[in-house]
Image (cartoon, rainbow, N blue to C red; front, top):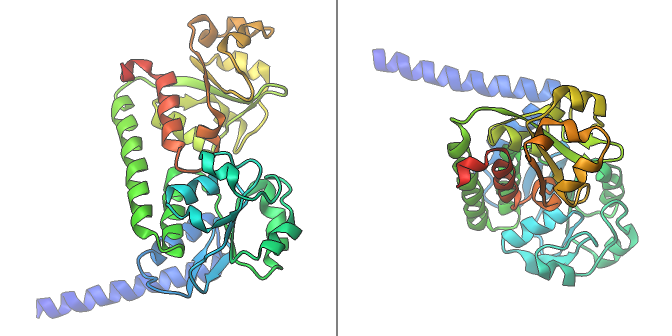
Length: 319
């Protein structure tokens, strides 16, 4: 009798869960958290074409058959395709797609900000991999070509893993996707293990110097700083990549100062800026420069970027 009651209760709970998910989906559409829940729920349940996905902009994307001709509109997307060993399907990339070296040989369809729609149409792709941000405006134009556009714009490692898993399904390279995810996860966990017991230090991350811009909350860099045992001063300015006043910088007086090469080629440059020589990070020689592409491209090399950031914040953990 008790077993029968328990079975009925389990069935009721399952039905209740499905009803709640349906209500949330109907009521709120593709809000970020619900979108991710939908993406997670779909994983493992789509066995064959046609496949339906929700991309990182909340757009519904239907893949009717295995893509054979792909155009990548972002360097990170190009790196992902190569990492998934599906580069033979790439027929077009941007002029910014410079890694790996083989990507430079693929036909160019314009730059990152202004891809050439006419040239894209002439190449007749069956899948376009776009990015968010500045490319959001061109996505609608590309959809009019009759080609499916899948937007990859993760803001953290968890979202990146979801995107990699979905691309694995779309391109029929699920094994390669799982291997890549495990590799990145392993590198991420290794950093966390080294830094979790170390003291938290204040970190400022410079994206651009004039005007001074930083990495705020809801960015990979913010997550990297936190994973590496730091406190992101830039998060005080808000989400994304906001401007940060030099007055506020002096007030916060970070323990560690990190910049991308595009903004500051040499740590010594910081001492030449008026007022910067008095910063705690400068006095203690805690100024570092990292490769832009390792921390700003949401692709397979982000784990390397995390390691570089962690070495800057807690070099003692990597001796």
